Length: 165
Ligand code: FES
Image (cartoon, rainbow, N blue to C red; front, side, top):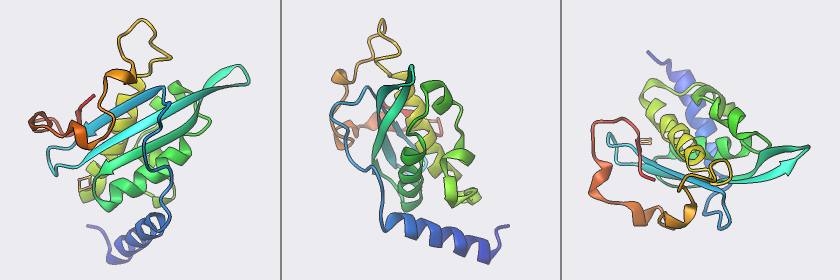
């Protein structure tokens, strides 16, 4: 059971993050894009990644997101897209919800799927990283340009978080 004080602190941090959300919107020149949906609540989230070369490594230069989601998902996505800067694809792939939530701390049990939405979008984007998979037909060009344009009945299903891209 979550103590009311802990829940209150969590909600305060979410509110503070939402007062100045970071990295919202499409990255027009992204190298990777991933979209997932949660059949449980109907929320969806898309994440874009743009890579750059730094010290001989290919690292994430920018990450952004677009969400039809609850406040927690938006807050986690805001924090996660900040945390991703400078990470290699391999490092990003190893980030779980605990890391992606940053200063928000652990998510309350009823909010865990909100974090999974962000984690799922990140993994889906990494799976569609055109720069890392040049031989695979995974460019962002064949994906819908907005999150709204991907809304379709296939979002429903038995999986908790469903890749839509
Ligand atoms: Fe669905 Fe938070 S309630 S992502």
